[in-house]
Each structure stands twice: as structure tokens, then as C-alpha cells.
Image (cartoon, rainbow, N blue to C red; front, side, top):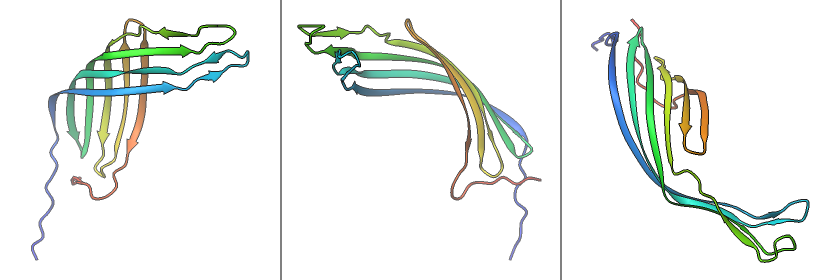
Amino acid sequence: MAVKAPPRTSDGYAIGLDLSGHLGYRSDVARGFTDSAGFVFGNERAQGGETGLEAKLLASVQNYGVIWQPYVAGTVDWRFGYSHIANFPGQAALATGDALTFDDATTFVGAKAGFDVKMSNGWIVGANGFYDHSSDTDIVGGKAYVKIPFGATDVSARY
């Protein structure tokens, strides 16, 4: 039986550009209710398609069996065929009922920044933050996470 030492990992880096896009459709309905004053709110519906692009600049730096992957990204998303309507049924405060149409923003631009650290055991630890902007909305957020693989993983040697 021949025994051979596992290959040594080499330190180094790579830089990449990831261009991606998405296309989807959504339909959300908020069911009506009656508030404590007796005013009746009808169903509210938001629906339409969405498409978008993302350009992500990333680096992969391997050092002592650990892979660091920092990245920055720019995004742009567009809504198409979009409608947002709230219905109010006839009642004492609003005899004939009404429908209210909202004119929400349909174009969003944003930025993301973050990093992933892939350990030699396959675990990935990371954090990121993002900012999205439109003519009527600003959204800021982020997350920190640990991804633990189940099953076989490629484990690099630590020599």
C-alpha cells in the first residue's frame, strides 16, 4: 500500500468580478380588518414583476489554510407592471367606499460590502452590510452568520 502525503496548500490570492441578474414576480395581499373605532379596512394588494442586476468585485486570499473572501457590490433593481391598491368598503364613515392607489418607487440602487472566511473544516463565518435607495425609501441592514456544512467537505491540509 503506497502512502503519499496530502498536497500542501499554497498561500496566494485571486481577484474576480461576478455579474448576475434576476427576474421574478410577486403578489402580496394584506387581508382587511376593522379597527377599534369601527372603521373597516378592506384588502390591500401589491403585485408586479421585478428584475435586477448585481456587479460584485471580490478577492480570495488564502493564508495558512484559511480563505478570506472580502467583496463589494453595486445593485440596481426595477419593478415592472407594478400596482399597489388598498380597498375600503362602504360604511358609515365612507358611504360609497373607495380604492386608494399608491405610487411607490419602481427603481432601487444599492451597495453591499462584506467578507466570508472559509475554515479548513468547511465552516464559513461571515458578515455583510447593505444600503438600498429609491425616490421614497432608504433601507440599511446587515447580518453576521456561520455556515456549517453537513456531509463530506473538501478539507485542505495544514502543513
